[in-house]
Image 1: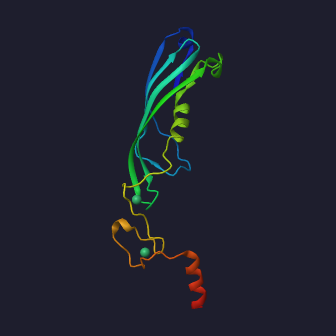
Image 2 (image 1 turned 60 degrees about the vertical axis):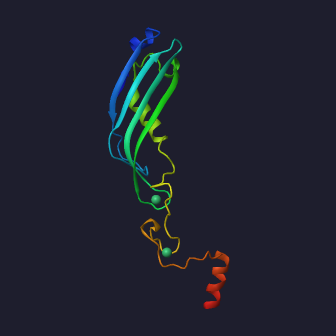
Image 3 (image 1 turned 30 degrees about the vertical axis):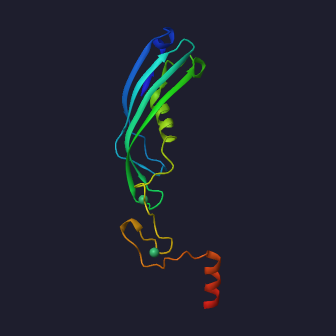
Length: 155
Ligand SMILES: [Zn+2]
Ligand SMILES: [Zn+2]
């Protein structure tokens, strides 16, 4: 999605509104886009710079940091950014907003999500999802160093 900035550059105060959908091509991200990213906002000639004000919205599927089950989330990212005129040379009469929005989006994916506030996670011994019920592993906390010793004696 490119925005023509020829007119915008000449008129301080001029505003260009945008509203488009972005569907980034795959990648190695650890999330799945369930909808295209809806990008809306305005680009304003601020006198000395371009002011970008917008919002990125999409439904994503992330992975719970504790139990690794899928978590659907509506993600909304507000963007406010100023760009010097110099960042967009005169020879290029347009700004690639799709590119800019894509970069902002990638840095906005939360690093940590939980399927629910009190997610119990996985059992460290058998890997069972403890939200689905207890497993039969012994419950006492075993000091890993002691556990190693115990293993030695059993051999
Ligand atoms: Zn979880
Ligand atoms: Zn277990």
